[in-house]
View 1 (cartoon, rainbow, N blue to C red):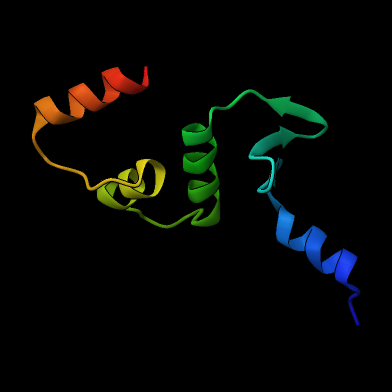
View 2 (cartoon, helix red, strand yellow):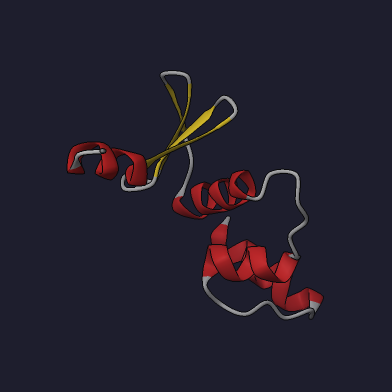
Length: 85
């Protein structure tokens, strides 16, 4: 039986291949080296790692990272990218 410390650790840390994700601190590591990543970058990478080998729509990725609906208007996308650059 797992104790609460082990259960909390398993909820906080996730591994996918060489990547390790600390979901509480929003940090990602390769081995012991932390990769610099903003919050949206961490969210996108973590989502893509979770669905490894499967397809994801751009709309779902966009909504998951920025928590706003995706509009197919190219100008809107360009403006959103400029805001986050």
